[in-house]
Length: 101
Image (tube, rainbow, N blue to C red; front, side, top):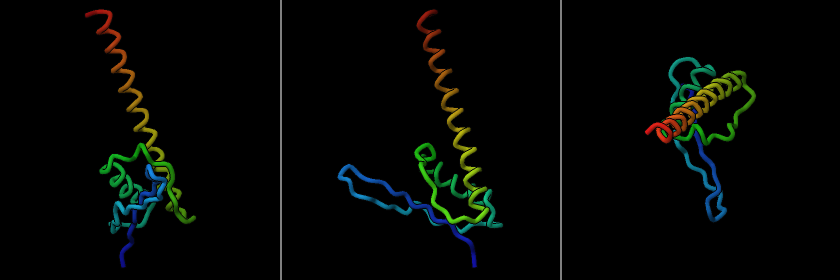
């Protein structure tokens, strides 16, 4: 028997219909730890370029789920910092270009 992890996206479309889409069903390799689960989930979120759209994660109360959520939260904060940093660098370049070119 192998542990697996499913990723389902739910949203309301423009006609106010609830939609559910299965994005991934992964057999987890290695131990069933929060870090391993986070790694598998982050791969899916990044492959579909939706990490920045994540609003909620539904799990049971197992301790490995808490670790998984903490890992994903850390990754999301890193992504926000990178975007903010890139945005500042681009805007500074535009200002410099405006005044010096």
